[in-house]
Structures are given as C-alpha cells and as structure tokens.
Amino acid sequence: MTAVPSGPKSPREKLHALDGLRGLAASWVVLHHMATNALLPQVPLLMHGWMLVETFFVLSGFVICYQYGSRLASPGQIASFMQRRFARIWPLHAAILFAMILPRLVVLALHGPASSQLFEPDSTHSLASWFASLALIQSLGLDQHAVWNGPAWSISVEFYTYLIFAAVVFFARERLRSVAVVLAVVAGAMLLLPMPTPEHLLICIFCFFVGVLAFDAYSRFKPRAVRIQSNLPFSIAQSVLALLILELIYFGENPPLLFGLINMFLIISIAQQRGIIGRMLDLRIFQLLGAWSLGIYLLHIPVLNILWRIGPHIPVSFLKFDPAHWTVIDSAAFLATVVVLAALSYRWLEVPARRALAPRVKPQPAAVEVEKRPTLRMEHDAG
Image 1 (tube, helix red, strand yellow):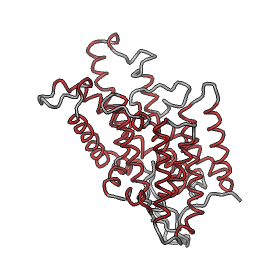
Image 2 (tube, helix red, strand yellow):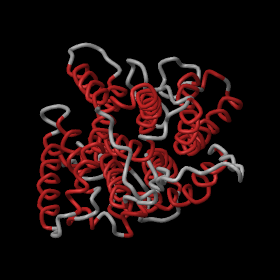
Image 3 (cartoon, one colour):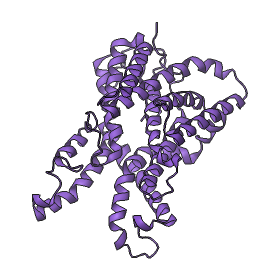
Image 4 (cartoon, helix red, strand yellow):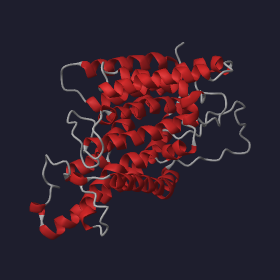
C-alpha cells in the first residue's frame, strides 16, 4: 500500500505558518521584479527571486493534498474541487485582464486597428492572447513568453495541475505516493532534456508533486514530532534549510530542481508550527500577507505599469515614479499601493466571488445517518 495519508485527525486544524510562508514568497517575487526593473539594487537574492514561484508550487501540492487527498472519490467531488479552485484564482485574474483591455478597446474605438496591438499575432497584448489568458491556457504550450499580466503564468499551469492531481487521486488513490514520485521524476527529467518542452507546466508538475510527497512525509513524521518537547531541533533544522535555500537563490538554483526538493523539507518542518521560522511566520504581519498573497502576486506588475504612466502627471514633487530616477519614497509608495489594493481586492472581490462561485452544499435529509468519523474539511486556504 502506498496511499498518501489523508490528513491530520483534527478536521479544523489550520497550518498558519504555511499561510505566512505564502505571504513571504509573494512579497519576495514583488521585490524580484523591482530589482529586474532596476528599481532596487540588482543583488542575486533579488534578481533570482523568481525561484520563489517554485515555493508556491511545492506549498500548493502540500496544502491541496492536506485538504483533498481523501475527498476526490467521485466525479462529483472532482467537479466540486475544480470549481472551488477556479473560484479561488480566476475572479481576480479576470478582473485584472478586463481592466487591462478596457483602455486598449477605447483606443481601438477612437483610432482604429492600425493604432492597436490587439490584432498583432506576436504582440504580448494581442486579443488572442487575452482570451487565452482568460481561459488560463496561456502557459500550457511551448511558447513561454509572458502575455498581458506576466505573473499569471503560474496560476495557468497550476490550475491544470490541480486537474492532474484530482485524476491521480480518483484513479490511483492507493498508489498516490508512487504515482507522485513517477510524475515528479518524469517532469524533472523532461526539464533537463536539451529540447523544447512546456517548461512552465513541467516546473509546476514537478514542484506540486514534490509537495504531495512532502505532505506524505509530514503525516508520517507528525506523531514523532509531537513527542519532541523542545523547539530547538525544529529551529536548527529550519535555520539550516533556510540557509541552503538562500544559497540556492543567490547562485540561481545550481544544480537545477534542487530548490524544490529543499523547499519540501523546509515546508515539512514549518508545518509542525514549531521552531524559530515556524513561529515567525505565525506573526500577524505574515498572516495578513498570506491572506492577501494572490492579490500581491497578481496586482504588482499592472500597478507598476500604471504608476510609470501616471507618474509624470502626479502633482507631488517627490513622487514621480520615474524608472530612471526611482527613489526610496517611490518604492515605499509602490509597495504600500500594492498591499492596500491586495487587501481591498481580498475583502471586496476575492472572498465574495469565492462564495458566489463555490459549489452549493446540499443539506442532508434528517433521516440519513451521518458518518461517525470526522470529515476532512480543512479550513486552510490553499494556493
């Protein structure tokens, strides 16, 4: 038997430290894009910050398996699962896409097709790529260039990796661990081949199923971890793993694929909610960043582009958002704007849309006997 354990016994246990890790990773990606645009010092720890997207994928595999590893037993449950994942990531993504295309449609209406990139096939802002992005398929092929909102490539590949996970659980629940190993190995091997591949999708599959294996290891280690009274072993392990991760980021992930594997062990340790890093990520600031992480991640590039455009027209002498003369005040204002907009979008768009689009739970008739064992309905907010 090689089934991955279904999850912790407590149906309401929430792994707060992992929410904090998601917030930290999203914030790091923002700093990475600031550095690549010469708005921050171009130091290796920031220039290679794209690697934190792999942390997202490993974390997602862990949390999705935590929540749904024993719940996808019928086509209806799979449909409900995919509907919930769609409701989680698509509404904000779609809202951003509509906000981005609206001014281009106005220009098209006023000046005609000759002045618009919408009908240029190779444009990163073509109408075809807009519809592909809306359908979350923009990153599934061999063409890996970013279109419209660049960071959204990751939610594109992650959404369809959810479907792969659901199919694996449905058809091979008792062999989930073995299948996860095979998928991770095959995806990793294909990434190393000297030939064109759907790189973004393969990175996601590799890291996601490494996350599934991380949850398997976490479930098996948890009973032993509970018996360890001191937090010192967790602090030491987390510190060593964090230093390894920082070293890999500094050198740009060399050798390839190792970053996802080191993240696996760090997430297993942090999920115990003990140790210096686990406790740090439980702080209020990281919990808020975790809740707003999708908005922080998806909004920061559109916000930066808008600030660059309107900067010269802002009637404040010390706030111009000029890329050639970017200041510390510009950075602070930009980051504050992203965080505030992410918080507002979470409160007024993400949560209401998630509730509106989530599958309706049918009430059980009173005569039906409810299953005695607790159901695996975790509150942890995945992805």
